[in-house]
Image (cartoon, rainbow, N blue to C red; front, side):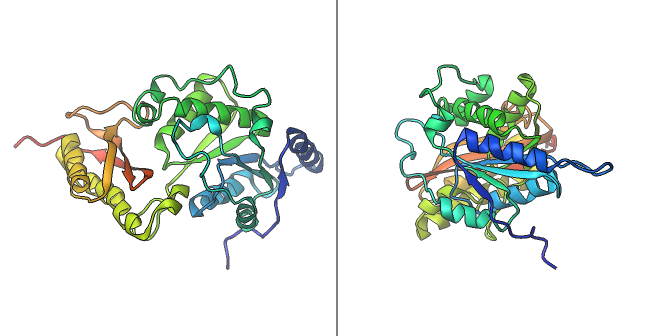
Length: 306
């Protein structure tokens, strides 16, 4: 028997007023009889060009919301998180295709605003700062990126008013930044991380994979191979993890590494050579003109002295 939710065509709204009207309609329709469990509103925030990784987030959102709950998927290519020379204009967009996919996994509402709806006064003067979390790794390579992410995430949380928000673990630093923002700014939303979805050969799903030629896609497998090699060296300490992952990347043609780092999964601080315990191994690299990121959890053992 299929475990997919019953297919339904989600309602597509593009303005604040339409979203608010649908929220009111759902609240009124949810006047429950005594003893029934009220559902929750769950949100999955995307930039569209949906793939199986996004759909897994929506399936999990459906489970979190419950049968009487509401699943909202936002589709918005956020200009604040793109830097100069990045791929804002050519970022893939396919709203009709996205809605068709969402109909198969239990989404109730698709909120697909234009920039003037999200930012009615133009670029916001007041923005959320990711602080020191946004100054390293992705923040160092893409200055202001995580500030732009957090600003739009907070705005969408206010507009959608969810009980729970789901984010993919592939964007590990983003997930950490969102969790810190929710905690530090007292935002009443539960944040749930969902494991990375991969192709059978290990490539992490990403909308940017569409930019890869067949040859580049083959080269991109070096990222997941490096992560696996690093994780397999965890019994040789932090240095062993980095060394074995680096060796794979150094031997990969056509892969230009931006960073490879082993970090504390709570603070994103780089770990020391004598570190032991749970860590995250993160990599960012360019394959052709496409920038890709990936990560893997690693349980680091103390380095054995020989």
